[in-house]
Length: 47
Figure 1 (tube, one colour):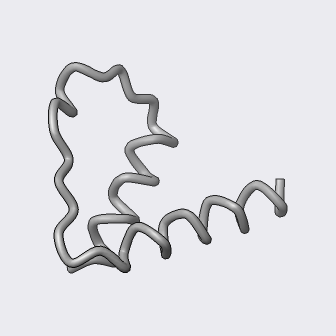
Figure 2: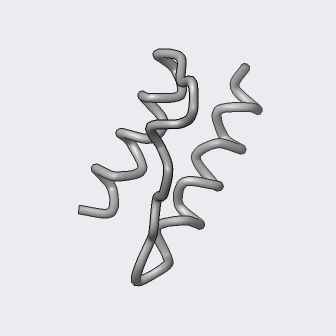
């Protein structure tokens, strides 16, 4: 679990390096609570 968390943190940090991040068609995806949490973390870090 800790390894997966570090991998996720690295991927989120890598995505924050872009000047523009376009998230399209998110309403078509089925998200669980954990996936929404990851998306929220990404957006909160960017802004």
